[in-house]
Length: 309
Image: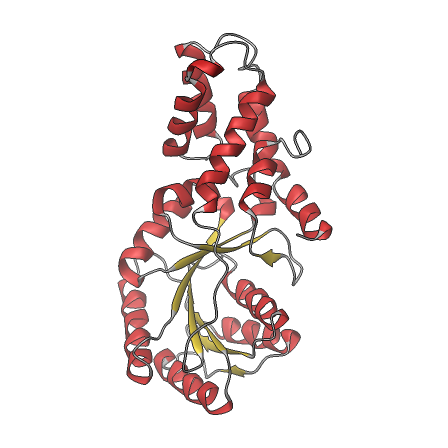
């Protein structure tokens, strides 16, 4: 992992790490009796790691070898180990292996999650791996969304298929797949309207897009990626719940981890749903969305980076 990306992660997760360290402050040193263990578990839940992860860390600390004189750093080292176990199961970069091409990636999420910019950064990431990428402007509800995606496509240097505001999103996607197939594009990334969980008509439109894709290629969409805004904290979990049921989510991207102290929700999402987390976003630059190393992220979140080698 590059030093630049490592530094980005350190900076991006600083507020999350500081919050966890602050919540655990003063809970070490004394004998880890039941009351202290309860306090530690509550501190971990308050750090957005989720009740399942917090309970497992509590159980580890309750083991005989950790009964006496557990310093705060020692507690955080255990936290890092348990976070790594959770993240290691889900840290999975997108694999581009569909045949015939293109691999169709449907990107979904609520307005404000960073979906459109995430699409651009994902396109950039795939182009770094020498894949040919095309975008489809499937969010036809807002002219601004079409224009924004077109601007990003020009900036990244990829073709885009789009239509007019209010147009048929499924028709645009159909045309995009045809063109991508004709020119041998490796990956087609499809933007969709920002969907609120209670907007049934928008979910119905998503189902229509999926049906159209299925007629062109029964395997499409190959990926349904949900973009989550880490600043929403536990609300991100309810979004996974709803979109998984209604849209068949196959993987996650979590954005804006640099803008929140609630980055522990990354762990809670991994623990509760077990969906692949393809990449995380920790900045505004084009290269600030990348797959992640579970050990590195776990140590940074727990505030032990540099404490052990």
